Image 1 (cartoon, rainbow, N blue to C red):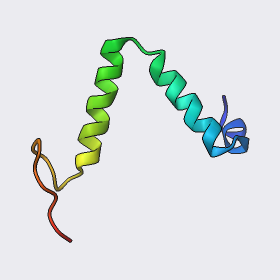
Image 2: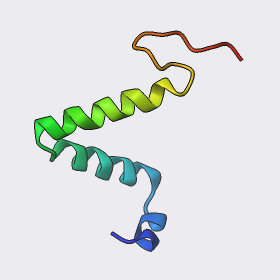
Image 3: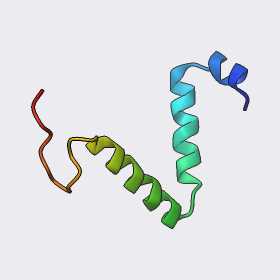
Image 4: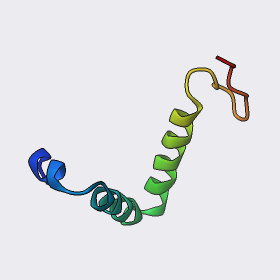
Length: 56
């Protein structure tokens, strides 16, 4: 899918495509994706597992 096609799809359709692509990955690749997402969600203020985010 090119970017023109992606721009024309509703947000819900893009989400479903993402979920479908994730579910087609082998289990070890899915685990790797989850680890990356968890690391990204911690952000720069939360380097350690379970560390609280610094107040802003």
